[in-house]
Every structure is written in C-alpha cells, then in structure tokens.
Length: 450
Image (cartoon, rainbow, N blue to C red; front, top):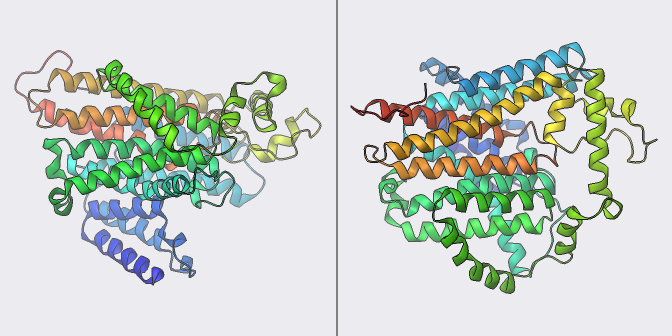
C-alpha cells in the first residue's frame, strides 16, 4: 500500500512538472530533498525519476525563455568557484576518471538548478513554494525522527541508518536539519503574518491553526532530532543560530528572558539521550582529554594545509582521500585515506588558494547582501506590501547560513545542495526587493542594490 501511495505522489509531481517552469522547479527540488525512491520497498531506481524531474525542469524552462541567472554578483562568484573546481580537476585531480568527473557533474547540475530557480521565481508566492517544498521535504524526516526519539524517552539515534544521498550519516542528517530548521521557522512565522496568508494554498488558508500546529511539531521534532543524532558541531551551530535569530527579530532580550522558563520546563519533561551532556562537553575538553573524533580533526586540517602548499590550485574535487596518505605524517595513526572533516578545509585542499578565497567571498558577500536587504526593507517598509515577509526571510537565511558556516567547519559538506540553495534564495530576494523598491516614486538614499 505504501509503495502505491508513493508512486501516485511521484506521478502527481511529474504531472506538475509538465505544467510550467514553476511546477518543474517544485518537482525537481522535491525529488532532490525528499528522495521518494528511498521511501518505497520495491526498487524503482531503474525508472530514474529524479533524472526525469531534472529534464522536465531544465529543458522546458529554457524553451520558455528561462535561463540560469548570471547578472547577480553572487551568481558570478558561484560560477567562478565552479570553474576553479574544473581547473583543479584537470591540472591534478583523481586517478579514477569517474571519481574525477562525478563531483563536477553533480555541482554543474546543482548550480544550474539553483540559478535557473532564481530566474523562474517571479514573486513572493513562488519563493514561498520553493522554501516550503525544500523545508518540508526534509522537515518531514527530521520532525518525525525527533518526535519518535521524544516518545521513546530521549533515545540516541547516533550511528543509526537515517537517510540516503546528501543526508546520509548522522552528521550530515543533523547538519541538514539545522540548516532547514530556519526554513520551517520562517514558514511557521508566515502563518501569523496576515499579509502572507494569501500566498498559501487554499486548504492551508482555510485551516491556518492546524497547519501552525503541524509546523510547530516539525520545528520541535527537528530540534530534538539534532540532539538525538549526537552531532556536536550541528547542535552547537544550531544553538548559536537560534540565539542569532532572537537578536535579529528585535526585542531579543525580552524574548530570550521569556524563553528561559519554557526551556527549563522542556528540558525537564523531554529527556536528553544518555551520555549526551558528556558528548557535548567533550568538544570543549583539554587537548589531552579530547575523544578520538575531536582530536583527529586538527591533524586532518594540517594535512589539508600541507596539501595546498604542494598543490596551490588544489588536488581536485573529491580527491582529498586519494592524496591523504602522501601527506600524512602520523604513520597511519588515524588510518589511511581519511576525510578532511571540514567543508572549509575541503575547499582549501581540493580547490586551492583561489578556491578558498572565492568560497570566503561568497559568504562575505551573501551576509553583507542580506543585512543590506534588511536595511532597505526597513527604510521602505511603509511602501512595501509585505515587509515582514522579506525581513523574516532575510533573518532565516542569515541563520541558516550561520549553521552551515559553523557546523560545516567540522564536516566535509561543500558539495551540499542547501548552502548553494541559500545563495540562490539571496539572489531571488535581491531581485524581488529591487523590483518593489524601484516601483516606489521616491526612494531613500539606500533603496536599491544594483
């Protein structure tokens, strides 16, 4: 029965993809994040539904005159970073041809999809649909897993078989949950935003309280899912990003003060996984007391630095493991062909100095852009039809990127859909806000980003 239901939903999404470019975009991201092929008992990988969804998004969109946007500075930096990947792969790269080509192909399709989505989205409703389909696709898994862990008495799911694809493994699942938590919070916020209610489908408009309760359960479940996965980096990054969200939303001291009794009651009622406190505390232990996982990371980062000194343009995407043994001076203490365990050192080793420089510029430019967009919205809020939508989304993306920036320091997830999607959403926000601001007869000094 489950297989039949999932197959029917898959067909419905493919039908939606036929309708227009927006439908193609929704189908593409649903297949990319939800991965329905992993939800059925039968093997349907031979049908290649994700590839079909990709084709139905890319080709018809271009026939309709929609092409990946390249006019934005962030988009130019994204393409530049990809070209540096290609350069390092061709100058050095892996010995295995497939291992050399696979990350280039993956990132090409991902960047194409992100920049094409930025072109397809034309209004706030389209943007909300994108955030909802991505957020709820993973939110379903993370929320369900967190609620199950709570009902089981706070069990730990570290090391358990979770999801496939980009979220395979406890650390990746926790990281994805932390990044998309702020998508879920944004959707929940729009439930009480009077100006946003018309953006939702009719059923949600008629049942706003029910949808709010479901979203709240997803949010609570996702937070506890990060805890139950015992991923220290993701937990700390998510906590700091939640604090940042309070600050960005204004009146943060009052809100934070009111949250103290709520958190105290929550911690008392919902038990933490056994040994969780000790695992978090181990991240701040003295060097001699660090566990093997935490103690090994500085060594891998040192290897990445030495690797880049010998290969200034990088060893090639996905090739750190292959080159690791040549630069490991620990006599195999941490075993052979190890992972770098950091997205930022991954970029340094695999794309070289130019790659890490461009990578850093992407984050700096995106942060500056989002904060500038917040100022523009505030300066023109009386003339915009839904300034709260823009401000709250800017806040959500800032916090989402912060989770990745901090948590990504401990996990190799540079080839991750979500961080690149956040860059794309920033491009879309710029386009939509500029469109509204330029239609205002008299603008302030800081009214538009060129």
